[in-house]
Image (cartoon, rainbow, N blue to C red; front, side):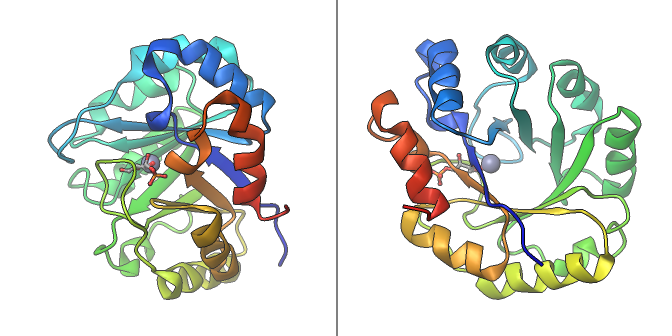
Length: 220
Ligand code: DX5
Ligand code: ZN
């Protein structure tokens, strides 16, 4: 099966004092999606931004808003992220006692539903939700911070790619954490089709964004 590689810059690495310009520059540079990392200081040891900031970014691009919720519990906030203009809403497997219910709820809001697996989360967490998910996110760092070193989980990524192919469903396989032009090749070869990159997308400022994206895509 062939699929296009999508690059999803993580806004966590953008200049927060200038988000409108950052979003517009990254859009013009060829980003496919925007990855929005929401952290609550509880599920992960860091706090980032929430739905009001996403709502403020929304008018500045037409591209997919891919929100990665590192919050627990998540259910009470899902509608806020749908209303803020997120297109894909991803929760963590451990974000509440009933991930199946949370995924159902995201679908009922008319949004695509994603499930994220931490490096230590087993693949079996996916087994009974394959009919519900539109995206599976494999974390290649422990969530909470940008700029961490890549953990090579190629076997896990390849295993999930096989599960997706067997399911016959149209499910994106996204990888997040430490993705650089070098590690991008590893995760693409293992079967990922959506690559999140914070540090590697935003480094060097707006004039470098287009080349950064080409480098991550691997078609340079
Ligand atoms: C980590 C976040 C990532 C992060 C990636 O918890 O989920 O999306 O922003 O940053 P880099 O690409 O710098 O590892
Ligand atoms: Zn993320």
